[in-house]
Image (cartoon, rainbow, N blue to C red; front, side, top):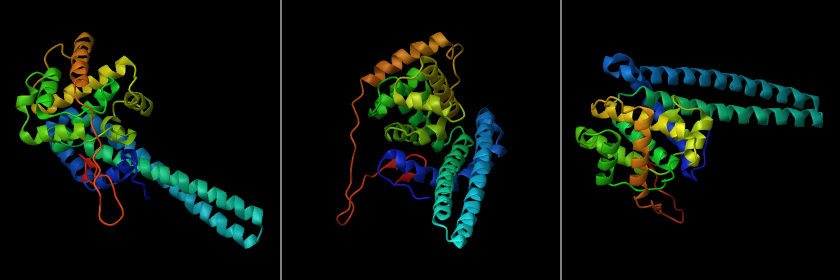
Length: 283
């Protein structure tokens, strides 16, 4: 399936497709390393969702094959009305198959992320994107974060985490946050094991239920702990403590500058936007 690359949301189709190459290796590593026990449930959840997506894609493909046969049979009748009906059914079957194929690609990328090592660059970049989703959910979206701002934000979330992370992890976190507004597909890859599609849509819409924000914040803190090796302090995930962190983080994010879109021109008369995505690089 070809996807138009007019917006970041459209580009995600290419993102998740490219992520398939890394997915199996990440899944194998996750099952082999006992140190990854903290993400086992998330990985298993993603694998189960992918299995369902594979099944529904196969069913949709069978429907396309059946519709093609029906169209060939209809053409032999030389009856215009029957041919039109068969063509309409084939068009609908193809549309369903395209949607199921896209969903399967998204779920495959979700497996690759969920089953990756807790300290990997993919986890760090994904956590950076989650921080951006947190900013959007608290009304501070479209912001740019620098190294000093990132360190302050990380230490507000999990004291001592900024100094415990290595340069590669910090760079991936920063890149993830500054990538741009995540799409629903991005959010599904990163948080599909935590939130439903409707809840993710609410988070990206900037006006979610406060309990969703607290759940997202808890997930981010746990991810930072896995990345940095810094344990979560006792009581830090209590509702009152999380609410305090939300207030602090919202103030910090609100003070950041607003991002701008950078466009680069390619050769000839055409032009395009250089988009860098943490799961696959720049496209």
